[in-house]
Image (tube, rainbow, N blue to C red; front, side, top):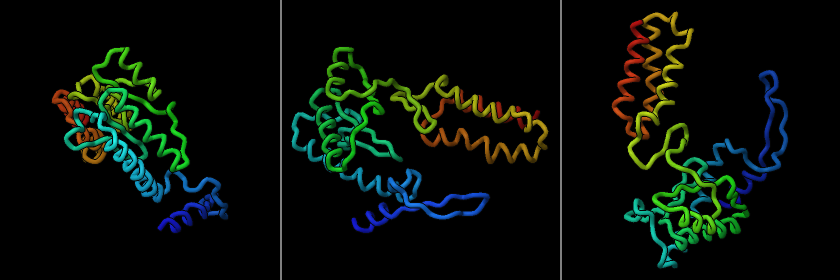
Length: 226
């Protein structure tokens, strides 16, 4: 299986589309492109090695503490798309276990961790405690809520003001000058197929406040009947 994967990565070639026609092939110098369908499977396989390294180090370090929300299931890391999320209790020892795991994984995979592109989110810590942890793992500090894949992430129930961008996005689609000339049948089709899908994506990830849902419904009703 390893030979198959390496053959796939090292023999990559690309063609260029010129005036609607594919022209020639040239060999890829850096393996697969990020958008290649195969890259997702390779990422999953490689991240499984990191999971095994973290698990082994956690088992050997009796002072490691899980994040309070992850303790029951013993979760230390989650991968989504090409992002990696790490969780632990906010103490120097636990953070050091994760840092050592990342560095060991880098040596095994031949990758260098980019701390400048990595962020850390604290909860209920004073400045002295934060600085102590940053000495162990020098990530950039972020605060919740943050936006991820277009949706705000927060540790609490999302508020109306944090959904302002969602309402503005619906309004921008509704009040587009082209939509004013649509018939009622086409307006209905636009609402059903396009506009409703905007907030459905948010609702599939988080619980939207009742006020946000009412505002969006009012916008859609006004658009349909006016």
